[in-house]
Length: 106
Image (cartoon, rainbow, N blue to C red; front, side, top):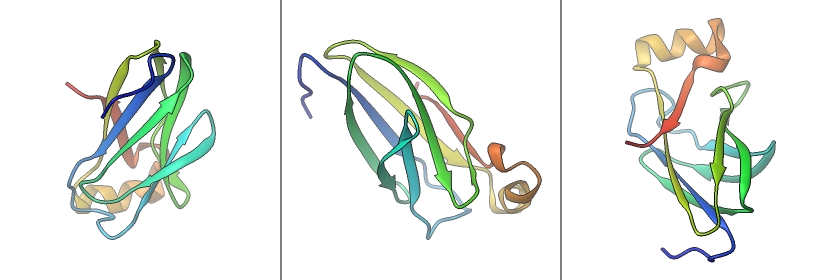
């Protein structure tokens, strides 16, 4: 997938996991919803060059915001995943901002 040479692109992949498998996660960039991610899915979003806060949410839980800086024509790949069901289900209540992990792809 090609991106405009004037824009950056964020590509977010949702790893297969064992918690929230039937739920679509909301993807937010700078506080605005830009799409949804299903289990084992991927979303590509064009962004203006600069620094952006990316966050994944489901209901009242989600990831901590991850700050990324995209240059013109640059593609930044991110991965989100949840804990295994036994840990994930409990963490949604104890630490809702820890339920989903968002990180740069390796």
